[in-house]
Image (tube, rainbow, N blue to C red; front, top):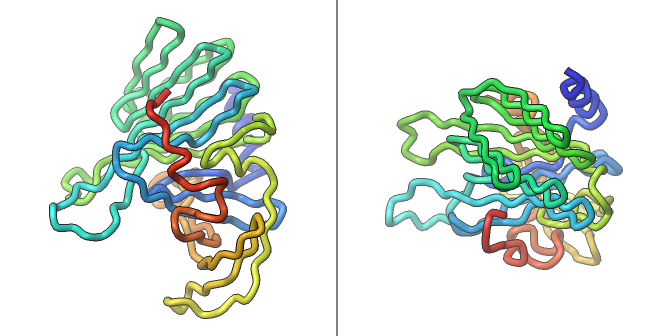
Length: 263
């Protein structure tokens, strides 16, 4: 359909996008510099992070974290994953709640529930929802951006962690210049300079000095996975990894992005 054609066009023009997947591994595409930045946020499971907020279009996206199944004596910082997403469009009075089990669309007081076993394209005058069975969900809202949510199902008896979601923002230039949030702030151009690349703690991952927003940060060259093209194995994307919950790169600190509810 027309939405699919549109989606393919966007993909060819910008194969890499602003995403949060895995850890949460945030991957930020910097087309001006033909490079990517990436960072992790280590917040406690249950916490809700504001990913995108655009006061002009009334679009907000929040993600709730889930943790690994952990034994009591684990000392490592816990990797966390997005276990629940809330997408709100205030102007259209639409809310979408997505979990690894189900997808609920609230339209005013009306409510429609789907599961990931459904194969469905829902065309609403202001919203297109496309569920690709057990794989992904595409959400296209009015004039705003397109969001793609990838379902990661882990091996049932995996002792470490359960199912989780990946979140990808396509065509983000459609949102206004007032857009902010952990991801949303990167929908505007950002300049950084890389200096003094030198060997890091692992041979294939050099460290460097990054100058960004008048801060001087030590960053590490690494790889992150992007799951838009291949939802099972992902594609490796080279990026500069910013440590300490992206301190110095994001506005404020990561705790500024913790919100009290999904909507």
